[in-house]
Image 1 (spheres, rainbow, N blue to C red):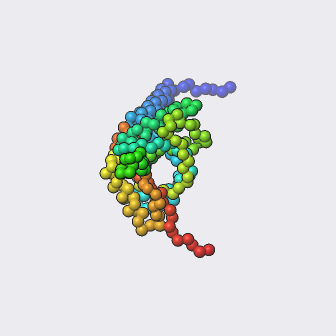
Image 2 (cartoon, one colour; image 1 turned 90 degrees about the vertical axis):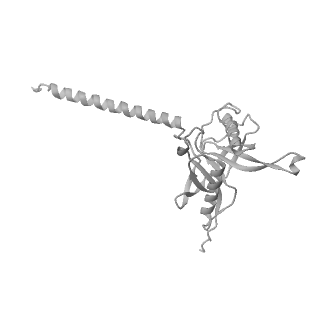
Image 3 (spheres, rainbow, N blue to C red; image 1 turned 90 degrees about the horizontal axis):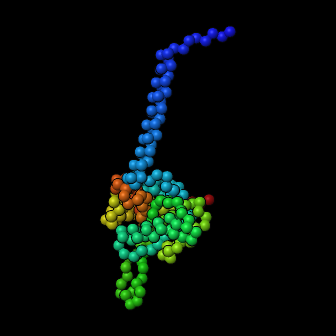
Length: 235
């Protein structure tokens, strides 16, 4: 016959205390995680947003990356006028598309970044003969798993394929003012000077965060398509 020793009341109380403290720690950790996610939302920090598939081919110093981007689809719209105002109007048009403003009313997952590039829009005659004004292409990259993009309801929004490309990219934070963008583009092109990478297009700007993000937490990038001018090796 087995003899069961009497339980030690102090040991039971000790175990109960340990269990209570562990439960308290787990609850606090869960609450802290929720608060951090809420803070990310309030301050505009990215969390789990899909980005176009890419790989870093080379780093030039501490600031510039040469990235290879896979083919992808994008929704884009062209907006004339001031760069900042055009960005806001373009964002509204594209947000309307991905939030159901399309045939089938499909909601499309948000991705980053939002791209902005300059283009030239000819004025209608007779003004086109004497003047032209700058316009801006605002672009959302669509999720990689979206094989067939729904047709936009807004005729100003178009779906375009984007070929694979090599991009030189310079990342920076803060407000993307025109002065800051001009300086960052100049820094990017200066970093490419004397390297094997030659710009083969116009610089674009990529925005990764919503407009309410605190400036020090923002991720902005200027990028330019490049080609490798390194001499080929003989077999």
